[in-house]
Image 1: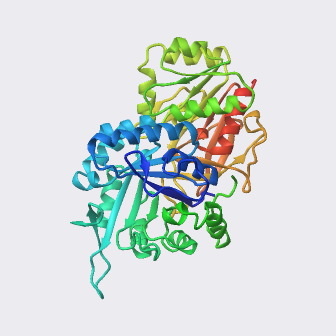
Image 2 (image 1 turned 45 degrees about the vertical axis):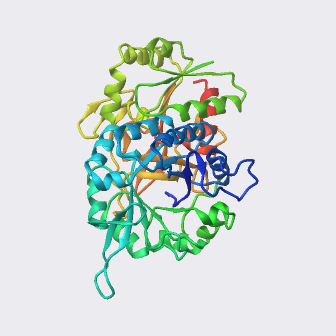
Image 3 (image 1 turned 180 degrees about the vertical axis):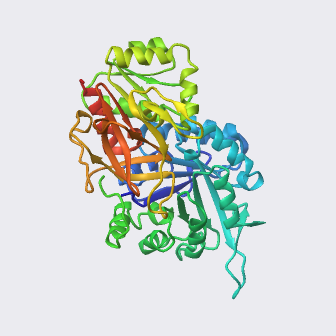
Length: 258
Length: 216
């Protein structure tokens, strides 16, 4: 049986993990490769690097991080952040990324998704969707795509957009609720269900995890195929093992064989 | 021992090479792992590995575009009996024909065709992406010491097509995803894995070690 995946996400700026990872005694908690190795050992099912490097000149640092990670971690790695050209996708895949997440560029030019999927295969093209609820109280639920870290509205309906990018070749959707991100109140389950019900590809739920029960709900009630979280793992609040054992007890199938 | 990992422009081979190096070093094999697009180097390999990601036809065309590669594979694997391991689309290419987009002939080493996964449960998504357990159809040196079955180790899959084999004896392992999906095939000195051993942590590294020790 296919298992629900737990995916820790590391924000990387200029080749360093923002805030670091503090659940084990790492020599250098800010080194993304050290953190990746720790999560590999801890039994994470995949790893996600989000490159938040601001300056164009420093973007090459991510390639080095990916290269070094691929040499030491025998687990799937997804990399996102600033991917807007076929050359970016190619460079990340050649460095050792298994999947590349496209965010703003998919909104600005959905055909970029098609171009990337045709060149490299749908299996490695993830579209990262940042969605915010725009419907008022009493209205039918509606979510819109936001860019620029949730600051810029686009007027694009999130469900329609998800369908469009899958039709263009996205092999997976990384869905972040901008209403929940950072709140620790749990995933936006209605949003999750709306997207998973609309597309035939796997969906990763993201944004809002504060407890292990939230991970269970993401899969069981939000119908997500994978759950992404950052802070609850990075600071040692819960281990990957604890999360999986908790999910297992709630009858969410997980991989516990490591 | 020389292990030739064939590079024909289908994605990154760094993790595959590193996983083979790790497995060799940790299982007492002195191996030279070479990533190569040169048919002459492939001919020198004691063991041959064919990875592959992307679409069936693209991979086959990329491979056949290298002058002499098709012949080198046929000679080394079929005539000389060198141990061969196909991974993901590299495994699918061993089939008679691929049905992804257009119909494209494969090597025809394993009778069968590569068809789209159609889970009998409409809730199940395609690609089949993530960690799944394996059912072993019969004992095989590649799976020596690897726990299979529902309580066994997991393998990492990411694919939308799978190989349907004609001859049941070629089917080595399956995985369940709204029906049975082919996870591994083997015949004589050649074997193929639909999942990614280089991404499958303990199971994958053990399987690669087994391949390096395999004497078919």
